[in-house]
Image (cartoon, rainbow, N blue to C red; front, top):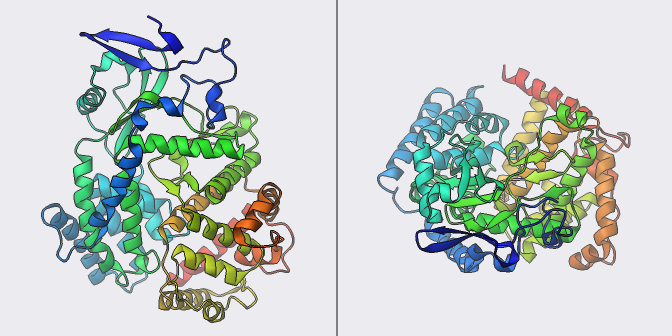
Length: 552
C-alpha cells in the first residue's frame, strides 16, 4: 500500500512498520533533491532528508558520551588488567622477549619484531587485527617491515556464521529477516575485524549493503583497550619500530576510532558529514553511499549498494575510458578541501575502502574512521601545507607544534638549526648506505631529544596521503608530480586565496616555491621542472636496494 510521500508500509502481527520515508521516482521526479545536501549518486534508491532520519535523534549526546569515556579506557592503569589483559600482555610480551633474545641488534631485527607482532595480533583476534590494519595503511609513517607484515592482516579475518548474523540483524531491526529483505546473501562480501558486509535486497526492491557488527566485539574492545593503555607507554624506546610512531598516541587514536566504530549510527552520521562537505566544496567526482533513513542501529547499517572498479584496476579503468590522472587529481583535491576548509575527511583510505564507478567517479566506503579537526587544528594543517609549499620552514614547524608534534615551549629556531633545515637539501640517491643510516639515526635522535611525536590527526592525514601516493604508482606512473602540486596549489589559491590569507593572518596567500617543494621530495633545485612518479619510484628503489645491500 502506498502512503503520502512515497512511504511503504508492511503489516506484521498487529503493528505497521515503515520501510522508507521518501522514495525517489526516476523519470517522474526532477534531479534528486538530496544532491543539494550531499555528494551522492544520481540514481538514489531513496532520498536522504537530514531532518527525517530517525536514527540521528540524540546522536550528539551519544558522540559526547562516547568521547567522554575515552579517558577511562586510555589512561594507563597501575597494574595490567586481569583476564583478557593477561592474555594480551603475555602474547605481546612473549613476542618481544623472543625477538630480544634472538634478533635484537642483528640485520633481521626490524623484520623479526614486525613478524612476531603480526603473529601475536592474529592470535589475539579482532581488536588487534583492527589495530594492525590501521598500521598497515601507514606507508611512510611506520617502518616498511612493520607495514608489510601488518598488510597480511587485511584479508585474514574469518567470517561469523550466518546464524549469528541473522540473530543480530533481527534483534536490532526488531523483525524477522524476510520481513525486511527479499534477498540476503549468506556469504559476506567482506569480513573485517569489527563487522562484516552482506549484499541484500529490501522487500521494496532496492539493492543494499548491510553492515553487521560481530557479536561480543564491543565488550572485548573495551577490555583490549585497557590492556593496550598499559602496554603502550612501555614500548616507547624499547623496540626500534616504536621510536617516532608514538605508541601511546597510536593507542589514543585507535581508541577514538574503534570506540566510535562500535556504534553504526555514528558511522552513518560520518557518511552524511563527509557527503555534505564534498557537496559544499562542489566536488561531484567523489561520492558517498546513502545510509538508509530507517534501517540504521547501533549494530546494523543498511546503505545504498554501489559498484565499480577496484582502485588498483588500472587496466579496467583505462578500457572503460576513465582518465586516471583526472581521477587522482579529483581525489586529492576533495580530500584536501574537506580537511583544510571544512575540517572533516575520510580517515582510513585504502584499496578496500574506495572504488571507481563506471562513470569515473570515486565512491568512498567504510566511514568508521573519520578525521575531525577543530578550528585550531584545521588552521594548523592549513599553515603546514600552505607555508611548506611557500618554503617557510619555521612556519611548518610552528604548525607541527600546534598539532602536538613538538612540546609547546620548543625553540623552533634551534630545531631549524640542529636539523639542518636551513641548509641545502642533500640528494639521498647520491649518499652511500652508511651515510643514509647515519643521517637517519642522527635525525631520529635529535627529534626525540626535542620530544617529537606523531600526532594522531597527522597520522590519519599522512596515512591517506600515502595511499594516494601508492595509487599514483598504479594509475598514473607518468604523472608529473611537480606539475600536479602546482595545479593543486593554484586551484586552492584561486578558490580560497582570500579565505586562506585571512585564516592565517596574511596579507595574501604566498606564492608556490618549487625549490622548497623539490627539497621536500629529496631533489635539489637544479632538478628540472618535471618529476614523474616513475622517477620518484626509481629513486626510492635505488635507496632501498642500497640499504638492503648494507644489511647483508
